Structures are given as C-alpha cells and as structure tokens.
Image 1 (cartoon, one colour):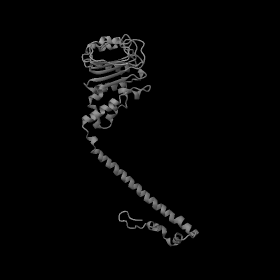
Image 2 (cartoon, one colour):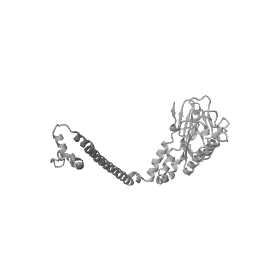
Image 3 (cartoon, one colour):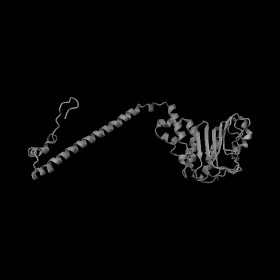
Image 4 (cartoon, one colour):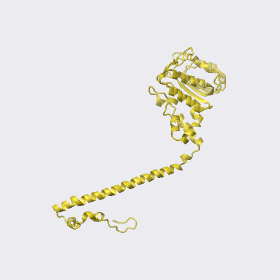
Length: 327
C-alpha cells in the first residue's frame, strides 16, 4: 500500500502486532497461513478460544473509542452552533423589522379555513395562533409583539358551529386583545355562519343565559369599540332585515372600508343593512349578494358589487366616481 502523501510504501500491520497477547503461539499458526494443510484440533481450539475472542475484544475497544469521539464531536458541534447563533444576523434584526415579520405571521394565521372543524373557535380565539405562541418563545420576542399594537388590532371572530362553543376564556382573550391594541384603529371581521344573530326587528337573538351569554358578550364588546373600527367585513347568514346595526349609527367616525357579505350561496329574501349612513371617512364599499344598504353613496369613491342582485339598488350611486362590478 502506498502513502497518499509521499507515495512511499506503507506496510500494513499484521494481526499479531495489533493484539500480540493473542498470538503468543503465532509460530504454531504460521504453517497454516503459508500452506494448505488442514488445522489440527489444537489449532482450532487455539483460534476459537484465544485468537478470535481477543480480536473481538479489541474491536469492541476501538468501537467504544469511536463512539466516545463521536459523542465529543456532537457536543462540540452543538456548542459551535450555539456560539454561531449568538452572533447570527437574525438575532441582530432591528425590533421594527422583527415586528413587521410578526405582523405578517399573525395576518397569515387568521385564516379560518384551518379552524373550520366542528366545535372549534377560530380567529383570535385559537390558542395556537401566532399572536399567542410568539410571546412564549422568549422575553425579547414577547416584548416586541406586545408593543406592536397593529398585531392586536385585527379582531376576527367567526361563529363556530355552535354558539355555545364560546366560553369565558374566549371573552378573556378578546378583552386582552383589545387592551393590547390600545388606541390603534381596528380591522374587524365578524362571520356569522348559521344562526342569524340578529332578527328582522334588530333584537339580538342570542339569549342572555349560559352558555350563550359568552357569545352575546363577545359581540357586544366588539360593537362597543365601533369608534375604533377602521375596516369592517361583516358576513351575514342572509335572514331578514338587519336593523341591529342601527346601534352603530354615528359611532363609526374612523370607518374607511366596509364589506357586507352573505354566507349563503343563494338568497331568496332581500336583506336590508342599516346603520352606516353616518360614516364621514367611508370611501370604499363592497356589497355581495345584498339588496339595500343606507350608505351615503355621494361620498363613496370605490364600490365593488359581487353578484347581480344589487343592480336595482345601485341606482342610488349616480354620484360615485368609480365602480368595479364582478358578476
């Protein structure tokens, strides 16, 4: 065998040099290595009881040494990674950039598709949502996310399959979210799936008794913050006239974008939405399969009409400056 460095011949060690104690009787075995003579019973006994066990023991010692070295290398690699992490660019991100990243993570995590299984409470009530898990990573991240009011300003409440799924912990989560948003304007998404929380008379249908009391409290709490609404996306089940929103009249000074949508695929009864006639900053309205709303159309700059049931209603909009219509 040649040395890879100097190309000189390197003699491989013989077995007896690696484990000399096992081959004290090497002279008795040399004739078997150099000839084809059969081994005697004494040779078989020598190899089986002395030589092979000695080789196996030595091999086990080498393997144990290798494992110790591998463990030592693993510890060094972990220590190396730990020190590299201390000086990594990720740890040196400005807090403003980190807050921006957290905002994108929280916005992406508010999609209700992942939380549509029966009995779930999606949106801000999902304990695995990013805005609740990020603060538990470390104190530094917790400080950043708690001081980012924009992250806590998206209030997304989706009616679960049963209104009774709401519990006191969900009321506490909403209260905590609103407190962390401080004075920041709110982006509100309310999605009513099945029950029809408001009837034609405008009376909230949710009984003020347990377990529905918590559901009622959640919606009343959000309505109480209407003066901070910046955008509102309201999904309704399509049942009757919705006079319940009349209570919002004059209480939406900061509302700029309004979307009124219906969760049912087909509507047989016209829906009237009232309570949005006094929104001084409102400039964008989206209407989906609705018949009428009391928005002051003269101030609206952008209108999106989805579906063809609103053509009659749109006669009110002669003074609008732009109209986007999607069939």
